[in-house]
Amino acid sequence: MIAPALDLTDVSKNYGGLRPLRIQRLTVSAREHVALVGMDQPMAEVFVNLVTGATLPDRGQVAVFGQSTGAIVDGAGWLKVVDRFGIVTGRAVLLDGLTVLQNLAVPFTLDIEPLSDEVAARAASLAAEVGLPAPEWEKLVAALDATSRARVRLARALALDPAVILLEHATASVDRDQAVPFGERILRVAARRGAAIVAVTADPVFASAVADRVLTLDPATGRLSPRRGRGWFGRLGC
Image (tube, rainbow, N blue to C red; front, side):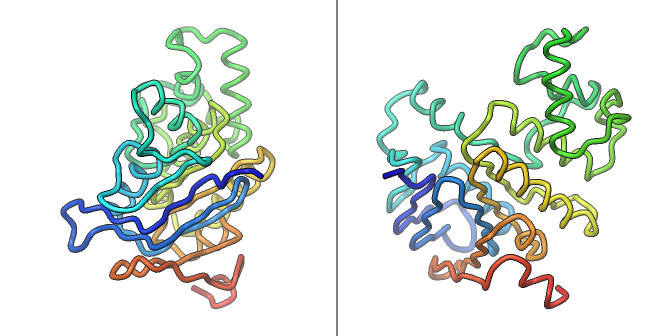
């Protein structure tokens, strides 16, 4: 039996907000695509840190592919856990003075001037996979619009072939009319790669586009309530 990608049970974590982050129960199967609505950006950052093992809960258990994050004993063990995640977040630093391809080459090598043919091909493959048009590949990242920058972050998160694509308010700066195409692209990429998605977002329309299961968090109780499924928000015109 394959262990869930994520399994959170009776989790509570204080972080200086109005109330702790609470999650009664969240289970995400391998290859499942789930969106969580109801966390602001500080709470979402705490959630990401918990599920990647960067911090431990004050109460409860967080397990990643069957391993409790509390059982991680050293840095090497933590790196094995965090390497299974491709994290898409505005907190991830992009190198504005480098081109798109150079930014996407950084996970593979620090020798980026010039790029070798092999590394350039790997970077170009990632750029194409996330929908960045070829004319943008040699542009400086500083010259890109918000949507293209989000796609660069997605491509870089995919570089090491993660088992879970973890999205932390990934569309916060993306034009609203681009949120659905971006979500649909992520969903296709995850399905093709056989990766799970866990998307923390404040945008219900994006949530519906990127996930097959949408859950809304009640911050007071930690209860996650399911929605009806993909496309539901769009039909309401939200």
